[in-house]
Image (cartoon, rainbow, N blue to C red; front, side, top):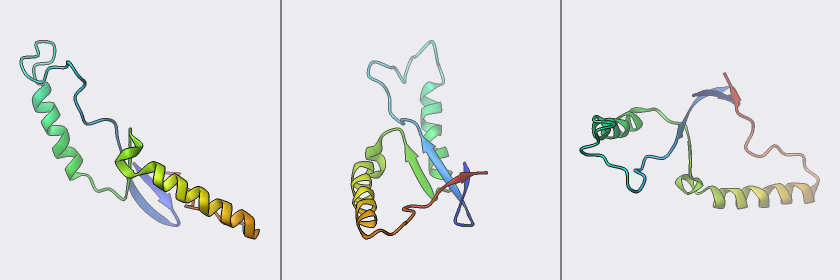
Length: 94
């Protein structure tokens, strides 16, 4: 996805969950015979994508909790000093 941020166009990649749910079969799956090759192809596609901003289904992918705590501390500090700062800017979809 392309987004605009501070006058620049950025490539944002949003990844669901590149894992296999328990009990699901990647081989000899009569309901989805090509599942293993599709699964393997997914990793090739992900590797090929240009990515400026990575977002995933699980915040652990990009240390969301740590970044959120740091952001909150920055916002609190800004509020205490009376400065109106926009932390992180805004992303606008094209």
